[in-house]
Image (cartoon, rainbow, N blue to C red):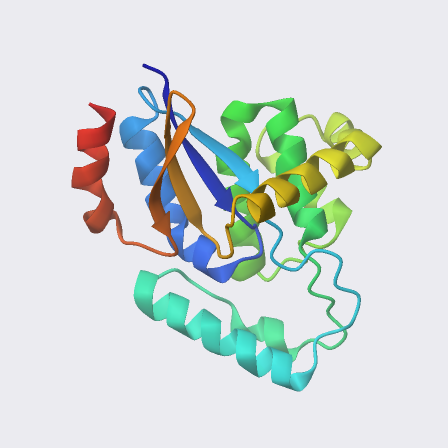
Length: 205
């Protein structure tokens, strides 16, 4: 029987960053029998307005909750900057680009973009930063930059967003277990590894 995990996330979603060690553990433990395939959901694609003070307060409170729940690091200096436009489409497209160039490294690339934004305060809306992270992840920089800017990558990213919407996925992270094309919901939202390890081991075996 054919089994895999489908992981729908956004590289600029704080709860996805919180879940990052868990999905990496799932891939490490079960990937040889049920590989993790990455799709992007589109948390705030196409945002054009800079963050306001009340936006910063709202998002900062989420970061605090995620840090408390997961222990993942956050750099709150992010909120001291002015004029940041929280558009997640470029980072989503970068993950799609990574997937198209080498799917086996796309989950690792997603994790590195998470870390760059949340822990290292790097601007992951910037194509140059996203290409730097790709270079650090072992992708050929020039090929990555060309693919990132291509119409095909934009269309594939929109197709991912459309899939998530059509599937009724309203939050991230979402993890599905797929067996012979039939999806089973594993989690819609953050979960600790301890809550998932036993049931997933039973499903994979």
